Image 1 (cartoon, rainbow, N blue to C red):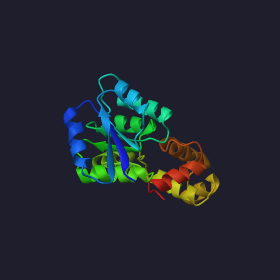
Image 2 (cartoon, rainbow, N blue to C red; image 1 turned 60 degrees about the horizontal axis):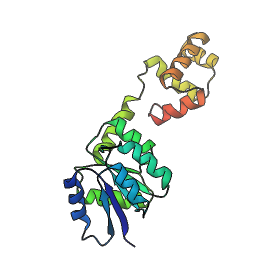
Image 3 (cartoon, helix red, strand yellow; image 1 turned 45 degrees about the vertical axis):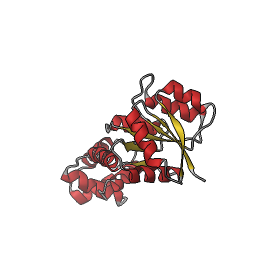
Image 4 (spheres, helix red, strand yellow; image 1 turned 180 degrees about the vertical axis):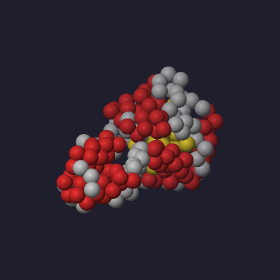
Length: 205
C-alpha cells in the first residue's frame, strides 16, 4: 500500500518540486498540500496522511507549534520537518514536539524518500547536515577534566572509597571528596552511579 504524503509549506516551488519528485513513485500517494497552518488543520479534518512534511516557517503559525498541535490531534500521524533552518534550537524543538524526522530543503530525492521509508518504519531520521550539528552539540557537552580528576574518576569507577583513593594517590580524603564533587558538577549529574555512566558514555572509562 502506498504511503500517503501531505506537505504544509508556503513556498510553491518547494511544494511543486516535491510533488513532481513523487508523482510517478508507485510507493507514494500524494494527498495534497497546504500553504498555512489554518488550511492544514482544516484539510486534516477530512483525512490524514501517513506522513506530514512540515515547514517550520509558516505565515500564520510556527511549524513548531503546528507540529505539537497535529500530534495531539492525530497521534499516529508521522511528521517530518522540512526546513531551510539548520540551527540546533529548531531541530530540538521539532523533535520535542513530536517530529520523527528533520530534513533540510536541499535534500535529494533519494534522501527524502529514505527519510519517508525510515519514519514509516518508526525510526527517527535526520539529514546528514543535521546529524553533524547534533554531534557537535554532543561534543560541546563533554567536560574538560584535569589529569588528577581523570585519575580520581578511574579509581571511583573501580569501586574504591575516598580513603582508598587518598592512600593510592597520597592525598587527603577531603581532597578526594572535593575532586568527586567537582566531577559530579562537571558532568551535571547527581550521584556517583550517574557519574560513572556519563563518564563511560563520553569515553573517559
